[in-house]
Image (tube, rainbow, N blue to C red):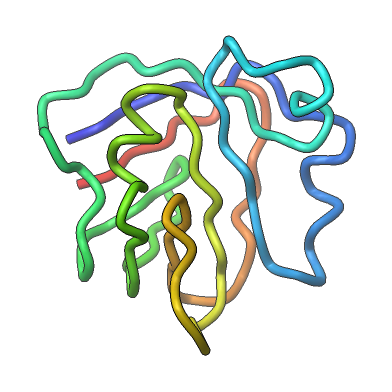
Length: 118
């Protein structure tokens, strides 16, 4: 399982509601990316590949099913705390650092929210 806590919601992080995407970044994200990202810090990482197709992703008590995983998503999450989460169905090739999750409703994310992958 991978567990992290939201430290900061960038002022523009939830502005991508129409595109149905949320960008996660670890605490070392450059300032220009912090504006558009959810900054989080890992608490627990006991799985080499916590992001799996048909696995679960949750923000607090809002649970999603992972429907597609980019080839670099797990490495990016471990190394940078970075992935892009699309709350829609993939209609073409999945970008390497992206995942898709269902249902297609953005989660309510705020400072202190707990993010898990299992």
